[in-house]
Image 1 (cartoon, helix red, strand yellow):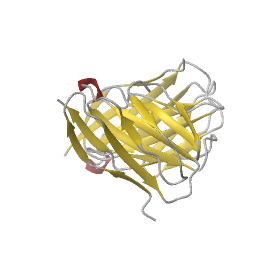
Image 2 (image 1 turned 45 degrees about the vertical axis):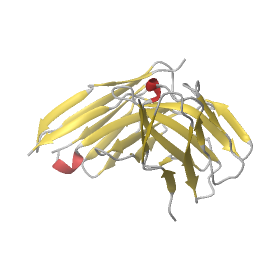
Image 3 (image 1 turned 90 degrees about the horizontal axis):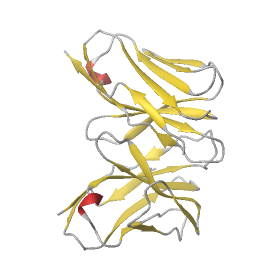
Length: 110
Length: 114
């Protein structure tokens, strides 16, 4: 079945440093979503990517969807303590349910 | 709108006990789902529903039952709790199963089975 992997599993950064998490699917996706979960909280939708090679920005966050629609990345510029949490990608094949990756846990040291 | 609500927030069960986790949404969403979250394993789909009266199994359905008698409610039943079911359970909803709909998650139920 479809598998979605994420690297790294954990990332510790100093406040102000950049952060990137990568998401890879075993199958070609119709679209991919990204979610953020704060410690003790629930996942919250960030963004959706649909087109091959698509790049979207939300303030300091940049999301990319690979040309082959099998990988994606989330890049945070100049991290802040408010960025702490676990970032999940969720990939979808048309007609099927979303499959979540295991997540990347980000900690930001002040 | 309250969004997606879940009760209880915390629960401790003994092995063999049964219980129902409640989930409700007030956004008139057709699609509802249950996930379990375990350390290092992300969110795994247990059961889902594409509308009232329609349910189907996800990735890890064993030991759980669901029903969808109304659009708003989607309870998850643990038939005979086992320690392996210790987890955080999230209910989620979206407008439809279609590709372009974000999922809204409830606050979660933290379940411990002794």
